[in-house]
Image (cartoon, rainbow, N blue to C red):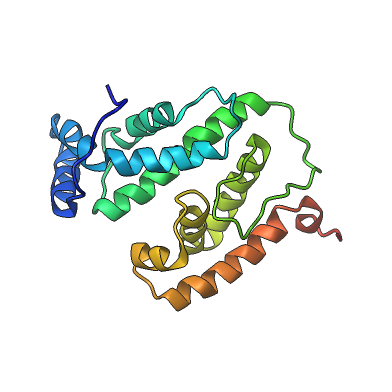
Length: 200
Protein backbone atom coordinates (compact mmCIF):
# COMPACT_ATOMS: atom_id res chain seq x y z
CA UNK A 1 0.00 0.00 0.00
CA UNK A 2 1.46 3.35 -1.00
CA UNK A 3 -0.29 5.61 1.48
CA UNK A 4 1.96 6.80 4.27
CA UNK A 5 5.08 5.19 2.87
CA UNK A 6 8.26 6.72 4.20
CA UNK A 7 11.26 7.36 1.96
CA UNK A 8 14.96 7.09 2.69
CA UNK A 9 17.32 9.82 1.62
CA UNK A 10 17.71 9.97 -2.17
CA UNK A 11 20.42 7.64 -3.46
CA UNK A 12 20.89 8.41 -7.18
CA UNK A 13 23.29 5.51 -7.75
CA UNK A 14 20.96 2.96 -6.16
CA UNK A 15 18.01 4.41 -8.04
CA UNK A 16 19.86 4.13 -11.35
CA UNK A 17 20.80 0.49 -10.63
CA UNK A 18 17.18 -0.38 -9.87
CA UNK A 19 15.92 1.47 -12.95
CA UNK A 20 18.26 -0.59 -15.10
CA UNK A 21 17.25 -3.79 -13.34
CA UNK A 22 13.59 -2.92 -13.92
CA UNK A 23 14.30 -2.35 -17.64
CA UNK A 24 16.04 -5.74 -17.72
CA UNK A 25 12.88 -7.42 -16.43
CA UNK A 26 13.79 -7.91 -12.76
CA UNK A 27 10.36 -8.52 -11.14
CA UNK A 28 11.53 -7.24 -7.75
CA UNK A 29 13.16 -4.01 -8.94
CA UNK A 30 10.03 -1.84 -8.92
CA UNK A 31 9.25 -2.81 -5.33
CA UNK A 32 12.75 -1.82 -4.21
CA UNK A 33 12.68 1.37 -6.29
CA UNK A 34 9.45 2.82 -4.94
CA UNK A 35 10.73 3.71 -1.44
CA UNK A 36 13.68 5.55 -3.00
CA UNK A 37 11.50 7.83 -5.13
CA UNK A 38 8.19 7.88 -3.25
CA UNK A 39 8.73 11.14 -1.39
CA UNK A 40 9.60 13.08 -4.53
CA UNK A 41 6.76 11.52 -6.49
CA UNK A 42 4.26 12.27 -3.75
CA UNK A 43 5.47 15.86 -3.49
CA UNK A 44 5.02 16.24 -7.24
CA UNK A 45 1.54 14.69 -7.08
CA UNK A 46 0.54 16.99 -4.21
CA UNK A 47 1.73 20.00 -6.16
CA UNK A 48 -0.24 19.01 -9.23
CA UNK A 49 -3.38 18.23 -7.23
CA UNK A 50 -3.02 21.49 -5.28
CA UNK A 51 -4.18 23.40 -8.34
CA UNK A 52 -7.17 21.11 -8.96
CA UNK A 53 -10.66 21.69 -7.64
CA UNK A 54 -11.41 20.25 -4.18
CA UNK A 55 -14.01 17.85 -5.63
CA UNK A 56 -11.58 16.26 -8.07
CA UNK A 57 -12.11 12.50 -8.19
CA UNK A 58 -8.35 11.92 -7.86
CA UNK A 59 -6.27 12.60 -4.78
CA UNK A 60 -2.48 12.93 -4.70
CA UNK A 61 -1.87 9.32 -3.65
CA UNK A 62 -4.26 8.00 -6.31
CA UNK A 63 -2.55 10.18 -8.93
CA UNK A 64 0.82 8.81 -7.85
CA UNK A 65 -0.51 5.25 -7.99
CA UNK A 66 -1.94 5.60 -11.51
CA UNK A 67 1.25 7.24 -12.74
CA UNK A 68 3.37 4.54 -11.08
CA UNK A 69 1.55 1.82 -13.00
CA UNK A 70 2.38 3.62 -16.23
CA UNK A 71 5.99 4.14 -15.21
CA UNK A 72 6.44 0.43 -14.53
CA UNK A 73 4.96 -0.79 -17.80
CA UNK A 74 7.01 -3.52 -19.52
CA UNK A 75 9.72 -2.08 -21.74
CA UNK A 76 10.02 1.24 -19.89
CA UNK A 77 13.63 2.40 -19.77
CA UNK A 78 15.16 5.28 -17.81
CA UNK A 79 18.75 6.42 -18.02
CA UNK A 80 18.97 7.75 -14.46
CA UNK A 81 17.00 9.24 -11.57
CA UNK A 82 16.67 12.64 -13.23
CA UNK A 83 15.28 11.09 -16.41
CA UNK A 84 12.86 8.95 -14.37
CA UNK A 85 11.50 11.98 -12.48
CA UNK A 86 11.04 13.91 -15.73
CA UNK A 87 9.02 11.04 -17.14
CA UNK A 88 7.11 10.72 -13.86
CA UNK A 89 6.03 14.36 -14.17
CA UNK A 90 4.84 13.65 -17.71
CA UNK A 91 3.01 10.49 -16.60
CA UNK A 92 1.13 12.41 -13.90
CA UNK A 93 0.21 15.09 -16.42
CA UNK A 94 -1.15 12.41 -18.74
CA UNK A 95 -3.22 10.90 -15.92
CA UNK A 96 -4.74 14.30 -15.17
CA UNK A 97 -5.32 14.97 -18.86
CA UNK A 98 -7.10 11.63 -19.29
CA UNK A 99 -9.39 12.45 -16.36
CA UNK A 100 -10.00 15.95 -17.72
CA UNK A 101 -10.91 14.56 -21.14
CA UNK A 102 -13.39 12.17 -19.56
CA UNK A 103 -15.06 15.06 -17.68
CA UNK A 104 -15.15 17.46 -20.57
CA UNK A 105 -16.03 15.14 -23.43
CA UNK A 106 -18.16 17.05 -25.96
CA UNK A 107 -18.23 20.16 -23.74
CA UNK A 108 -15.29 22.18 -25.03
CA UNK A 109 -15.67 25.18 -27.27
CA UNK A 110 -12.98 25.38 -29.95
CA UNK A 111 -13.33 29.16 -30.11
CA UNK A 112 -12.92 29.85 -26.41
CA UNK A 113 -9.70 31.60 -25.44
CA UNK A 114 -7.88 29.78 -22.65
CA UNK A 115 -6.44 32.11 -20.04
CA UNK A 116 -3.32 30.46 -18.67
CA UNK A 117 -0.69 32.42 -16.78
CA UNK A 118 2.40 31.67 -18.86
CA UNK A 119 4.65 33.06 -16.13
CA UNK A 120 3.19 30.98 -13.30
CA UNK A 121 5.17 28.09 -11.87
CA UNK A 122 2.03 26.01 -11.54
CA UNK A 123 -0.04 23.63 -13.57
CA UNK A 124 -3.30 25.07 -14.97
CA UNK A 125 -6.02 25.01 -12.36
CA UNK A 126 -9.01 23.86 -14.42
CA UNK A 127 -9.57 20.89 -16.69
CA UNK A 128 -10.16 22.92 -19.84
CA UNK A 129 -6.92 24.84 -19.43
CA UNK A 130 -5.05 21.64 -18.60
CA UNK A 131 -6.23 20.09 -21.87
CA UNK A 132 -5.31 23.23 -23.79
CA UNK A 133 -1.79 23.25 -22.36
CA UNK A 134 -1.41 19.53 -23.06
CA UNK A 135 -2.39 20.08 -26.71
CA UNK A 136 -0.05 23.04 -26.98
CA UNK A 137 2.80 20.97 -25.52
CA UNK A 138 2.16 18.28 -28.13
CA UNK A 139 2.48 20.89 -30.88
CA UNK A 140 5.61 22.34 -29.28
CA UNK A 141 7.08 18.83 -28.94
CA UNK A 142 6.86 18.44 -32.71
CA UNK A 143 8.65 21.74 -33.26
CA UNK A 144 11.25 21.66 -30.48
CA UNK A 145 11.33 18.73 -28.00
CA UNK A 146 13.71 20.51 -25.62
CA UNK A 147 11.44 23.56 -25.33
CA UNK A 148 8.52 21.22 -24.62
CA UNK A 149 10.55 19.58 -21.85
CA UNK A 150 11.36 23.00 -20.44
CA UNK A 151 7.68 23.94 -20.28
CA UNK A 152 6.81 20.57 -18.72
CA UNK A 153 9.42 20.98 -16.02
CA UNK A 154 8.33 24.54 -15.27
CA UNK A 155 4.54 24.09 -15.37
CA UNK A 156 4.15 20.58 -14.05
CA UNK A 157 7.26 19.75 -12.04
CA UNK A 158 7.46 23.26 -10.56
CA UNK A 159 11.18 23.66 -11.22
CA UNK A 160 12.81 27.05 -11.47
CA UNK A 161 15.25 27.93 -14.23
CA UNK A 162 18.42 26.86 -12.39
CA UNK A 163 16.97 23.44 -11.58
CA UNK A 164 15.73 23.05 -15.16
CA UNK A 165 19.24 23.82 -16.43
CA UNK A 166 20.68 21.09 -14.21
CA UNK A 167 17.99 18.58 -15.16
CA UNK A 168 18.36 19.16 -18.90
CA UNK A 169 22.15 19.53 -18.77
CA UNK A 170 22.17 22.97 -20.40
CA UNK A 171 23.23 26.43 -19.28
CA UNK A 172 21.00 28.74 -17.24
CA UNK A 173 21.25 31.27 -20.05
CA UNK A 174 19.95 28.69 -22.52
CA UNK A 175 17.00 27.95 -20.23
CA UNK A 176 16.17 31.65 -19.88
CA UNK A 177 16.39 32.16 -23.63
CA UNK A 178 14.36 29.01 -24.25
CA UNK A 179 11.67 30.07 -21.78
CA UNK A 180 11.21 33.39 -23.57
CA UNK A 181 10.68 31.51 -26.83
CA UNK A 182 8.40 28.92 -25.23
CA UNK A 183 6.38 31.60 -23.42
CA UNK A 184 5.72 33.43 -26.70
CA UNK A 185 4.63 30.14 -28.26
CA UNK A 186 2.30 29.38 -25.33
CA UNK A 187 0.65 32.79 -25.40
CA UNK A 188 0.09 32.60 -29.13
CA UNK A 189 -1.00 28.97 -29.30
CA UNK A 190 -3.39 29.12 -26.36
CA UNK A 191 -5.37 31.90 -28.05
CA UNK A 192 -7.37 30.31 -30.90
CA UNK A 193 -7.92 33.72 -32.48
CA UNK A 194 -4.19 34.14 -32.94
CA UNK A 195 -3.68 30.49 -33.91
CA UNK A 196 -6.28 30.90 -36.67
CA UNK A 197 -4.74 34.12 -37.91
CA UNK A 198 -7.16 36.48 -36.19
CA UNK A 199 -6.48 39.49 -34.00
CA UNK A 200 -6.89 40.08 -30.31
